[in-house]
Amino acid sequence: MTPLPDDLARALDDALDPIPTSRLTPIVERLIGDYRIGRAGTATAILRTPDDAAAYAAYRMPATYAAVREALGQAADVAVGLAPRTLVDVGGGTGAAVWAATDVWASLEEAIVLEGSDPVIAFGRRLVATAGNAAVASTTFRPLRMDTTVALPDADLITVSYVLGELDEGTRTAVVREAAARGGTVAVIEPGTPDGYRRVLAARDELLAGGLTVVAPCPHDGPCPVAVERSGTDDWCHFAARVNRSARHRRLKSGDLGHEDEKFAHVVAVRSPSEQHAANRVVRHPLQRKGLVTLRLCTGAGGITDRPVPKSRRDDYRAARDTSWGDAWPPRDHPGS
Ligand SMILES: C[S@@+](CC[C@H](N)C(=O)[O-])C[C@H]1O[C@@H](n2cnc3c(N)ncnc32)[C@H](O)[C@@H]1O
Image (cartoon, rainbow, N blue to C red):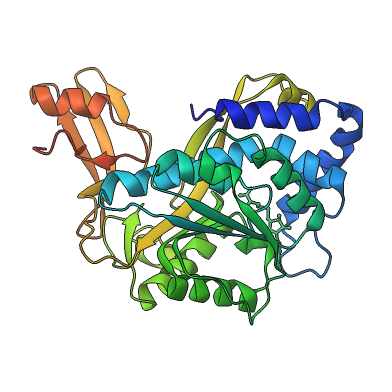
């Protein structure tokens, strides 16, 4: 479970409590439809009004926070020397990535959110106003409409989370290319769908062409072994973050479950050549049978393999039982496997 920080959960409650759920429900339904069909490059912005911003924050922000938190956590786990001081969050919406990144890296001191929708900026500003973390509380939200001539400021960390799908192809390429030129570390996170994965693969190519090295999820800089043309399957690389559903969330999405699994695809790349790749990445839920754990791994050699870890290898088996989809293998504190 990736819970929201308490101060973000409180700020969301304070901002959303005065708005009747009945006013937000139809907007949530429209947004779900808009995001499902994909509105890439359409002239009409999806989030246009204060209620749109509130509805987005209510039903999506906990999930995008969790996905970014997991993606950056994977990177921090491998690239242990990273200590970003400045963050630029591109198409940052209500600022989910700022909250997530500061949770991963206490080194962050300054954050800028670049965002095209004024009501979304207003909502994001309201949320950070009561943040406990000084970097979050002092976040600057700046209006920016991205197009093919987009220019970004330099930053130690640039996040591009759940944005590429809203941009036409030319703008998408320009944004990632510019992020690769300006960022010490660049994180691109997209929905964990085949389309989201394809956008991440294209972004990964741009980041590698810009001289960066991938630290998450891939344990190598070579071609993705999951891509259709290599694997011959229609599989796609993605991960999942478990998100707690608040009572409001359940009302808005008319669901009963206390949680949902946010599927995401991502790439995090760094400029620093001293950072290492993971040896392997676990790319599916581990299969647990009696006395045997089987890990599906993307390997440092650039392939996919199923690695059996039998109970007879006691220490490895114990480590494998504690290993989850998305983890590096072997774990950093158990390097022997
Ligand atoms: C799906 S939301 C994601 C928000 C945030 N990054 C997150 O992870 O929750 C996409 C955001 O990108 C913004 N956006 C879309 N197209 C844009 C453009 N051309 N220029 C600037 N912002 C844009 C939208 O206003 C929206 O806030």
